[in-house]
Length: 108
Image (cartoon, rainbow, N blue to C red):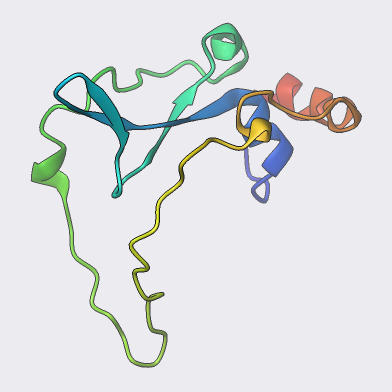
């Protein structure tokens, strides 16, 4: 679209879900890669027509490593993970921000 990133537009189109792993009958939060981002199903009509991935199969073949540059170091891994998704992750754009999206959605 040729615009700067727009957080409310992003939240309007996409949702974030916590990823979990099974340990027997128990579901545990995944300590690495703990959130997944996906296009909201009921907003697919507002998104640009393109083929999106429907599977993460083979993700490891596209994995890459980043050197920890001393001039701009990566944050230290704390071992912590998100236990509960913040309420704002699931509810989309706040009502007061929706009016600013009309022009952007029309451009899509």
